[in-house]
Image (cartoon, rainbow, N blue to C red; front, side):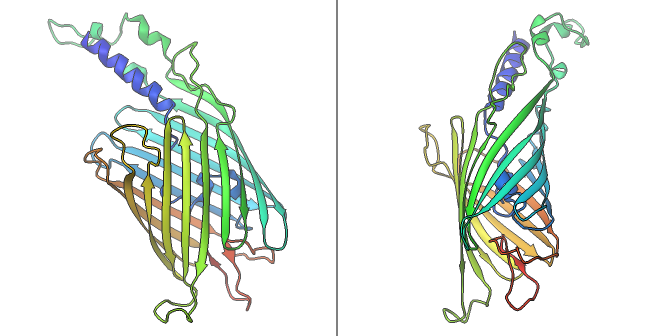
Length: 343
């Protein structure tokens, strides 16, 4: 009975995870493609990047998540891109992989404001090797030997792999220094149950996000270099019973930026929930075409010794510039010098 109980607990955890949160990145403002397909082509030039997140870095609880993207604005209004997501858990052997094609369309509302519409569609796969589970009848209690097979019919009702189609959509309203967006993922509610003839629809993932850039001038303070910006950003996320609100402030210089993101649980549905769940300092360095970012999630809840969460990002943006590159992400200097990336 002990090993049958282990099997039931394992299967329950897998089913629960399928209905839980999608992977979330702290550096969402550096890689906005993780949030909303409408950001595809927003740089008006070739744009690509990778982001890697590691939770519980030591021991067999390690969880790794990677996200990659590439996109470009192919006409004045249309952007096309590709995104990849891979999520792996060492302890359970669970793996989640997804590849999506992305389409975005820009509408100029007036001289300053733009509306960007995005659609994302692709293929997803979830893997969990149930054959690695050890059942009671596989153990010879006299010798301690392990038999390779089991007569337990319960394990036969579960599949090691799930394949599904997934669709998402979103919009972004922006001008040079302000942006606001909404995205909804898993619009088709794909079935992600590992059990045959069962139906576990993947919960909608809803994100409401925005940001505001404030540019400092030397007339305010001689201590602040010219061209310094303060980014205020927020990102509210909900999926099923889970919710999270990230609030952040980032000071950006010509090459360096530093800031902090606070991850909060505003609804606090459980009695032992925490309003503030982590404090996440962020550093980034920018060259002419590359931006490197690092963040560390410092846990403030009673979750235990999580050893923190490390996140690394590397994004590339082509140095090619054009007359239409006047959005909040790429600001051109009027004197014709090389522009700088504001995201």
